[in-house]
Image (tube, rainbow, N blue to C red; front, side, top):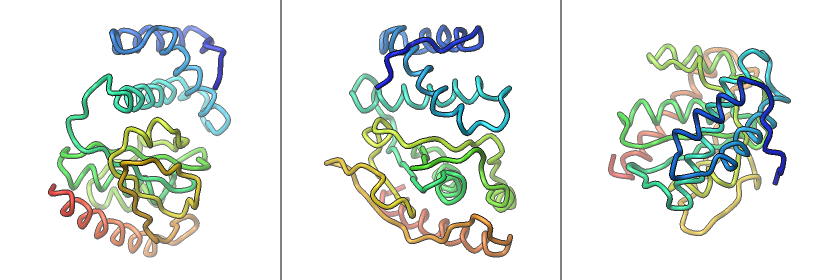
Amino acid sequence: MRTDTTAGGPDYDRIVEDLTYTYDGVFSKESVAQAVADARAALEPVSRIPTYLPILTARYATTQLTAAAQAEGRITKQVPELLFVCVHNAGRSQIAAALAQHLSGGRVHVRSAGSAPVGEVNATAIEVLKERGIDLTEAYPKPLTDDVVRAADVVITMGCGDACPILPGKRYEDWDVADPAGQPLETVRDIRDDIQGRITRLLRDLGI
């Protein structure tokens, strides 16, 4: 656990102020500052474009704060929470999360993460989702944390082995889905369609 709550710089100070307002009554300013500092520390080593780092830090800190609040019962979940996990959070888990959000019509909330995230989402994954009218251009790889696992109702893993913690009361599924990394467009289309079939079955099983 990091103890340095200094996010560093005016951009990050603004993020802390904004999120402190957003989570007023849920988290203290110190807790928000810690989340922002942790988010920056997690994303900075793999960030390809430094000017985007504050934006991604704000988004990731928001995700982590919301997940922590849900896991601790500070805020109530309105819909089931799905978490998709793969190794790099650049292909399979991003495709699955985007398709689940799209096909459910907002009747689930979706997160994705990676056990060893990389710097950017697979360009071919973005392309095959664009063919289905789904915009993945603002997605970014994120590290897996205990909070997002604790907040999830269903955890779907794809090729990440034992990296995902097993917690009681969660539904776990391990999907044997091919990795799109380095694959041609036609193969990634097949992977997309495989994932879509699995998502459809999952949503039906959840009554969505």
